[in-house]
Amino acid sequence: MTKRSIVVLMMVVLVTACKVGPNYKKPQVQAPTVYRGVADPAAQPDPQTLADTKWFDVFNDDRLRELIRAALIGNYDLREAVARVNQARASYGITRSDQFPTIFASAEIETDRRSRTGSVELPEPLKQQRTFGTVLLNLLTFEVDIWGRLRRATESAKADLLASEETRKAVITTLVSDVAAAYFNLRELDYELEISKRTLVSRQESLRIINLRQQRGVSNMLEVRQAEQLVYSATEVIPALEQSIEQQENFLSFLLGKNPAPVDRGRGLTEQQMPPSVPPGLPSDLIGRRPDIRAAEQGLISANALIGVAKAAYFPQITLTGALGYQSTALNSLFTKPSGVWSFIPSVTQPIFTAGRIKSNVRFTEAQRELFLVQYERAIQNAFREVSDSLIAYRKVKEVRTQRELLVTTLTDRTRLAYMRYTGGVSNLLEALDADRNQFDAELSLAQSRRDELLTVVQLYKALGGGWQQ
Image 1 (cartoon, rainbow, N blue to C red):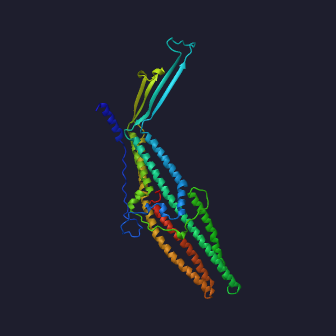
Image 2 (cartoon, rainbow, N blue to C red; image 1 turned 120 degrees about the horizontal axis):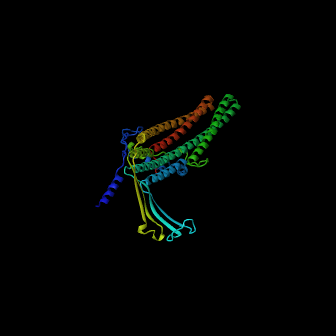
Image 3 (cartoon, helix red, strand yellow; image 1 turned 135 degrees about the vertical axis):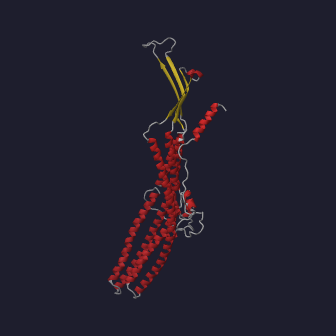
């Protein structure tokens, strides 16, 4: 091996092997062995998780699926996230290009002619008209990345790109859950409106009967007024619900990236199907599944790489500038050997006095890494909390819904018996009206419990990191 080959090999090793600054090490996180809130904490955790299910398999309402598909196309937050990914990808390409030399080609032909009658007499051998030609390959100032400054900057830019991609996935997860939650809220409002209208019809019929009884002297005006009170209370609920329904439709339209408009419905609230099971999976797997956690880790990787960029400022910066080509006063001899020209200008720059700027910049990047480490650890702990909260809500809301179903059954029968006793003259109207009012309130509460049960599935699905898988 020649001396020149040895020198070249040593330069390659220096350029590719030396990188100042700390290499990234994944922080150790102590994950719980089981989620708090599972039905049986002593049972062996199932590695399967609800988050592995595609969103179109979780939500078995064809209309809801169509709404989610439309949102994944037109939602503004998602479109913005996609634009940020493209921006980060372009920024990564720009940063990475700094590691390579930039070479430009230039060509120039100059022709001039001088007058024989000018003030300066040209010697006889010189021609009046001359043509100059120049063809060069110019190496712009290129930094030899001995200390790894450019490679650390590229490492940081790549991590930023990956973080933006994970953020896009997190936006998809949030969007899918937001559309599903808004749709279930809408169907619950529809059901409340249905209950209110049905109750209004029933109370109007009761008022008609009481008016007939009053006209026959069996009842009195107090009972008429009490029945009218129930009619009016049911009537006033209807426009308030209609207002909420139209505003909820507007919100759904906004999530879809559309102008406010009516929203087509699918299955009713009581027809919605719950998943047969909602396994949470292993807590340790959550860290690698949730895109917001992965985005936080990429932010930590980027901040760690920037420490190397800052520390490289302590070392000399070596740059190369050069040119290679041909230059001649005659075009026919432009590319001959005597016309060849070249230049090579290496330079070394070493900071001597910066008034603590470099040191402060290193401290700044180290503080940034600590900040991103805190954010990463907080994202993990918040994820565990959200899953636990969702599991607890899933079990407890189901218990509440079961009890409210029993309550509605009881109050419905009580109302029937109370009106029978009233028409039979055994009890007064107040007892029947009170039972009617309690039944109405219980039916509305049951509708809300059914919606809440659906929402707990949505919340658990999101907390487990599901929804971004296409």
